Each structure stands twice: as structure tokens, then as C-alpha cells.
Image (tube, rainbow, N blue to C red):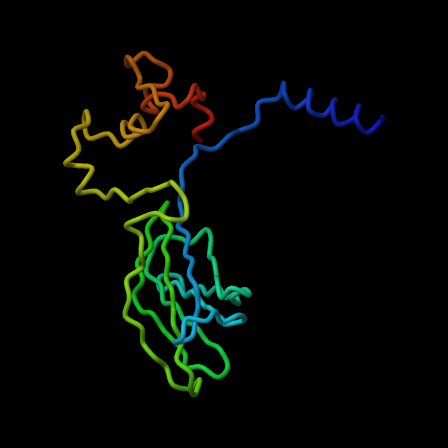
Length: 191
């Protein structure tokens, strides 16, 4: 009973406290796939390495029992994907381009043989049809922003393109510097 009272008190206390919230903006991609042999059988325990060429950071993991791997929170950029498994040739996929708020599927088929032999796989990650979730996103660069029909080419006006957004109505509006509000959120929640 004391625990229930404590939790209830904590919830009521936090309900009156405004926690700083972040805008629901994605800054990363998801990379997933399946590693199989040439017959299509799953290869469990294959070592999958994702190498960011810009930062030289490497992330490693092993495939699960179904031969699947998932890398969440992948920063946008150019990557190399290496797949190794004892008794199989090493597969390398060069120059993979990942953008924000997209899921990419990169399936790999390994050939049996000496692991010292590196097989370069030429593939494009599949991102045209989002089969893992319902979200999509894209990077808008400087040239695209200059061509968009916004007042004074102000990037903050793009905020009003998302669902639940209300544009600023006048320059005296408190939210005018942020382009408006999203689902009734306050300006300080966009920091």
C-alpha cells in the first residue's frame, strides 16, 4: 500500500512539473537485413560490421538464429558493410548511402569457401518501399530550400508542413520566430 501511495504521489508531483520535451524529429536511419548462404538458409552468428566512412566509427553485431541483424540510430552518411562467418567467404558492400528517418534493408548471401577471400557485393539498399515501419523522411539541402515557396526562404516555415502544425499568424505572435506550433506545444519545447 505504501508503494502505491508513493508512486501515485510521484506521478501527481511530476504532472505539475513541465518536463522539457524535444521535437519529434528523426536524425538517424535504421539498417537491417538477413544473412544467408547460397541455398537461402539463415546463417546464425555471422559477424556484421557497419563502418562509417566519415567518422571511422565501427559497430559490430552477430546475426540471430534467423540470420537477421538490425542497426538502429545510424547517422546519415556513407558506410561499408562487412559480413564474416567461419567457413564462408567475407562479403563487403561498399558506398552505402543512408539518409535520416528511413529504414534500409541490405540482405547478404555468403558463398562457402575460405574466409580470406573477400567477395565485393554490389547492391543498393532497398528504401523505396518502407516495409519495416510507416515513417519516411529526407534531407533537404541548401539548393532545395532556395527553391521552396517560403517567405524570405526561412527554413523554420517548413515546420508547418507536418501534421498538427499551426503556422504563426503575425509577427507579434510569440511563436512567430519558430514558424508556429505543433500539436499545441510551447516554444520552449523546441529547444
